[in-house]
Image 1 (spheres, rainbow, N blue to C red):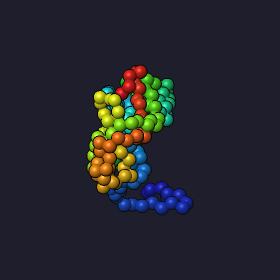
Image 2: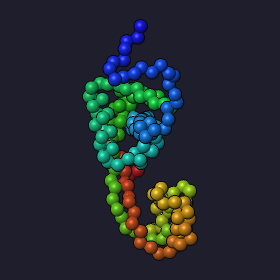
Image 3: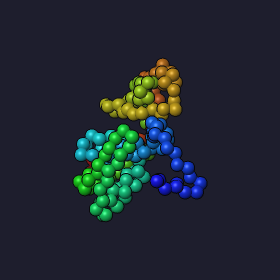
Image 4: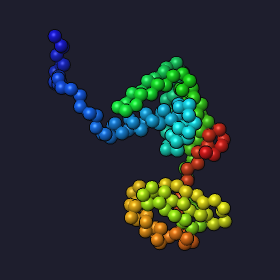
Length: 176
């Protein structure tokens, strides 16, 4: 005979439904992919993960994995769509990566010309005056694709001064 669930609680005998994309599920999935990116052997996955975070997240991730390493802990993380194992090697790799990685973000004003905007991809390319190679990056998703298409008609090849949020990622003293 099953135990009574306690005062104020009701036992529900129904099959579990499909887990919806709630804000909690989305946050857990993102955090899980991030932790995996730091611990994964594949350097490309690490580069992808580090590109999505700031220094505060690197520092917090370092502390998390360092506590695990000091305690000799391992971890298995299971979400609705994935299953990750973090053994000793993965945890040590994550600590090493977070210790040797810094993320700097700053605002920079540059003179040049807008080369193009990809409205659907929310990407841009900007030619800096006197530079041989253009820079590129992401455009805020709050700006609609229609507005970005207008940027192409209005601002491409026009001398401009633009303010950018620049993220520099250093790993083992190399800029990534």
